[in-house]
Length: 281
Ligand code: SF4
Image 1 (cartoon, rainbow, N blue to C red):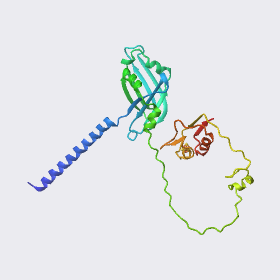
Image 2 (image 1 turned 30 degrees about the vertical axis):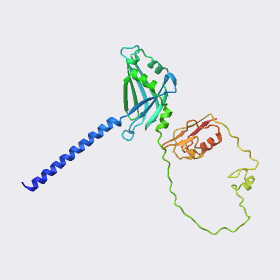
Image 3 (image 1 turned 180 degrees about the horizontal axis):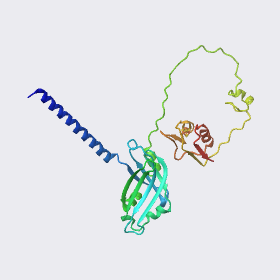
Image 4 (image 1 turned 90 degrees about the vertical axis):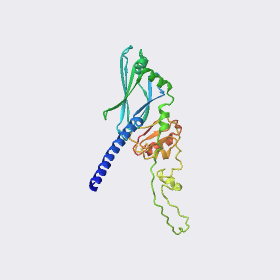
């Protein structure tokens, strides 16, 4: 047989093998995504009583970069007393896995008490109104109730358990050493505002406090929170790490943060370049 014919046949077989291999790989990747990377809704323990619903929503944000901002509950109860219920609640848009504990009002309490709830179909939808994406989770009312009763983790505990280690910026500095002759000994001192010896001449301005200036009295605060707009500069955590925790994309108030050192919280708030740290006395 002609050798060029044989070579052509081998090349054709290799090309077919390559196409089949790529097809199989693509199928496997789809199957993997279907089995392990599908969006998941986990029902958590609510701290809002009968009208509360806590949940965690996880999805592959790299594959689906959308912001979810609404949860919707729908009850299909054809043989019960209230045949249909539809409740929606908006929350601050989230672009990565999150957990929330929402107060849904009286209507939600009544939704749970609908006659025939156990046999009804409950549909929970996580909606991105801006990106027009919805993920639906459907279950029987009995399963929904059981999941709520069995839930052990609160939203806060879930967030803490899955919190990613904040990646702190690493600044490389060039090490340089200068060796100089020691300065000759002298008794001269600089009369500048930052020299505490001369603080009274500058009325407390600069680094030196006036001698007769009364020390500021500390105070307790009732609440401290972060408004949107944090630029994760780390200033607050450097000043008061027991209260502020800077994550990859925002700043959080640590659970159980001490509130008795108002001066330090105030210092952090004043150091915040975008003024998003707020507190109430
Ligand atoms: S100081 Fe302000 S901007 Fe900087 S991390 Fe703290 S809250 Fe964010």
